[in-house]
Length: 468
Image 1 (tube, one colour):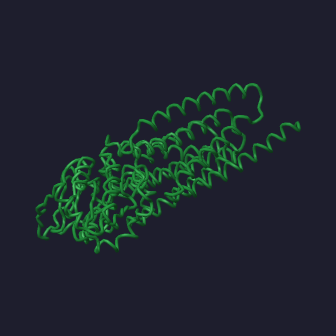
Image 2: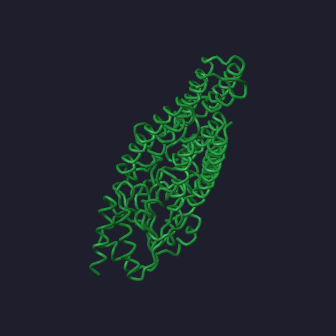
């Protein structure tokens, strides 16, 4: 091998190592709100280095021409991505993330088939191709269904087929049998059949998951996309792809475990589509409790109550995202703090439709990080809180999780806002949350409802506060 090529390969290897380090730093940066922007920058620089190193790898004239096509594809993809990033609102971000996961899986499937069509030399290579394509197919179809659920195109209710676990086991068995046939024969039809079964399995796994648990599903699909990339790395003998995929896969799995723990769920239920299992049946002989009456409050009334308070906690939910009320909430926070009133935020691990959804919204509005607290950090302080303002949240503040063992969210840790002196819930209506169940919080004696669009309602309260 010529010395020039040897030197360049050594340089490319160093570039890959630098990129891998930057990816690790990016992941570390994303662990904290204060360092998230820096983490994103590390990731962008690392990816740029990796792309340049890959495209400038020594090759013949045919590969050089192919690289020009790749560069054109990257440019087109970057343009589409830029347009989407500029046009997609935060309310649509969860389904966009789910859809992007499907692109990762689809890319792995297409690369795997391309590798197969160009000729496979040995058994190990066939194993790598098969694993890459199977995980990619599950990720693709599962992510597409998650996208449709989050978008509302498909019902968020779980699809609980009879003997669904046996069906999953049967499909898994078929995938294994087809893997053995493919490894022995290398015939294309076995790979195609395995891909088809894996695609159906991906749909069925996500279909069995209830709407309230979709944030965990998005996190788990993120993990799947990482393992798909790692498998592709082994297939393509690309160390950086292996490292990057392993980072994404492991971090996504850890995040899913943390979220499952926060929801009192089992991680195995996520993997095997056990979410959405029917809750314990209610006692038919039990007395039917009336839903109760709600008590309303208007903007002037809430403003007067806030001015008489010392400690206020704000609980943001998906309704704040749909109403684009984060900047109004920031103005409310600044106004109250200027009057000497303590304001803090309580964030539930699965608030919104995406892990960290509320944190991103508050960061976008420049809410100080030091007044944003996780559920476990602030639940104990709620009994001493004068006013809790719930903005567009429902399931994460539903006392049924603790009081009703037959509820679909029974056992799920929630923000115990009802323990505060006063709870003000801002919603458009008394409608159920994403889990599709009623919320007894609305009928508690210390709860008042501020009906209306979140942005308009909060702005009205701010206007009243500024008059005082």
